Length: 187
View 1: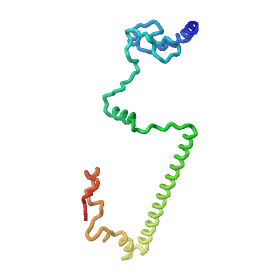
View 2: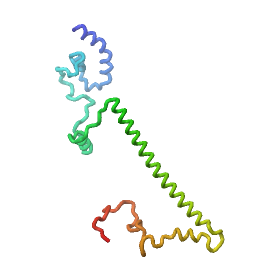
View 3: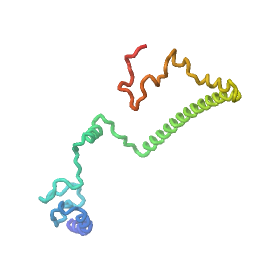
View 4: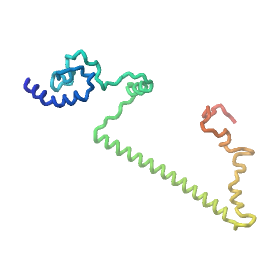
């Protein structure tokens, strides 16, 4: 057992020397033994039982687990809250099935939305073509040129007697109103 420890020490000595050179000198506090950095047992995950007095209690890359920023506290609270659902940990086949179903659903959604957009575009183009027919029905230069088109574009009687479009019910502003919907309003 002692021979394997010495052979490991010989193998790890070049690595430790490069490791020591990458750590700032003030964190090492002039240690010459390898036991201050490396655990006493060769492949142990527990830290060594004997620490030197000069070492800080936390390693240099340690991050504060209790930050003062309230946003980080809130994120941590909601991520670690017992009622927060845990992320899915699926096996490879279940993940593949999940991904396939998700992609199929997204494709179906995209087809539906594109179909609705095509239908709206078709209706708009047919209305535009009908308006162009009305506009070009009478020959240009005559008294009635475009008369039916102008009548079709008038908005008389649409908003009620003396009414205004709903867009003008509130002054146009950059931001929405303080109250989104007046539930107490009656006719």
